[in-house]
Image (cartoon, rainbow, N blue to C red):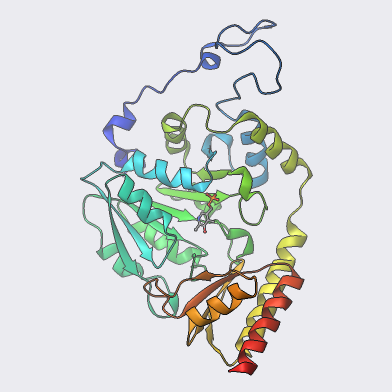
Length: 347
Ligand SMILES: *Cc1c(COP(=O)(O)O)cnc(C)c1O
């Protein structure tokens, strides 16, 4: 099946808003009086490029995908998640499938768009329940959400198992790779050509250290990537953010930081495993650790009272007893280890 057959008919037929700068085609212009902007130079008086051409060119180089396969969101991947529901799911009619426990935004975004989200619990060891996910589908299932490495369980799923889903699911498989930089598996990006029903989400919020810029990406076959461009708000990434991102892409090298986070992750995991108040430390392919405690609420309160905030996942189905701890600087991780050792000694 052609993946465009899964798109909502009104989106396929959509005539996008045409900005002033879309209608203008080239030429040597010195007076810009087409967009009702202020003529006084404030530094931000002109509308930014709605098509993010310069950024797309850099991301295309960085990721090794054609610019036509890229959508860039200005509210992080959360924007791409919402637009994905809006492009494929008819409100009140279509449904989507997701692994659980997983990233909470899929559920909220589905609810906002009046789309049923069918959550399928991960199997033992947080493994991917391929057959159960496929069995949850019916003819109105348009999207299948796989987060890999998965938040909050921290493990990645093998590209083979995700490919099996892309082969067998009669809809779009969305792979959220927010933590891909920390994973031992390669990104699914290289499989976009082979599986045209695949969409890959990535972000600059985690390994790249730019959470405040709010830049997320969706990668897909050009026909699908183009739909994001039609549905998005016309100027969804502001000018200063586009400039800042370009500057950082030209000057950043994240490899040393990523290597340090991975080494620190393994060290903190070992330290936690040696601590008797910790019942289990789950395998992590991300920049955080999920750990199980007898009394997670007590540990959470204790850490807060010592100025450390972790994510309490005790009330999330499938994560009972668990706290999620982001890997910090080596000093921060050492401090957390010391606090938990002291708590253990006092109990
Ligand atoms: C953090 C995170 C994101 C990134 O969100 P942004 O909106 O890009 O900051 C996406 N997916 C998952 C699973 C995450 O944990």
